[in-house]
Length: 119
Image (cartoon, rainbow, N blue to C red; front, side, top):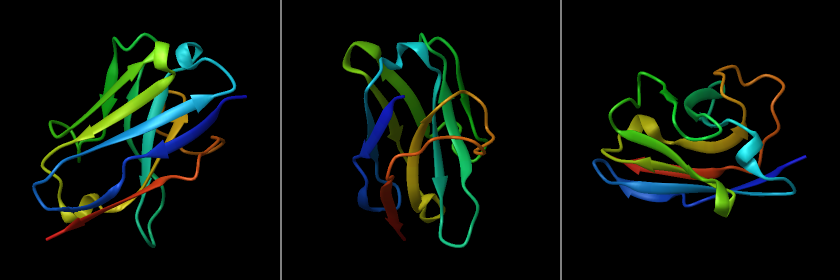
C-alpha cells in the first residue's frame, strides 16, 4: 500500500500562489492515477484535480479550472498541485490520494496540508 504525505500549504493573500507536494512511499506511484481533494470546515471533501498514471490526461473541478495545475514526477514518486490566483473560497485542507475519479469514498488519505487564503 502506498503512503502519502502532503506538504506546501500555508497562509497566502488572495491572488497569490502556492505549490503543494504529495510524496509517496511504500510503492511506486507510476502504477496509480493520482488526485487531489480538499475539505473546508463544515463541508464535505470535494474533488479538485486528477492525473493519469503517465501524466498525459488531467481533470479538474470547474471551480479550479484555469487556476490550478496538477502534475507528477514518477521518478520522484511525487505529485504536485500548482495553485495560482487563489481565492478565499480555496481555503481548505488539501489531500492527495490514488485514483482518478471524483468520488472520495473508499480512498486512503494522508494527513493533509492546510491552505488558508486571506482576502
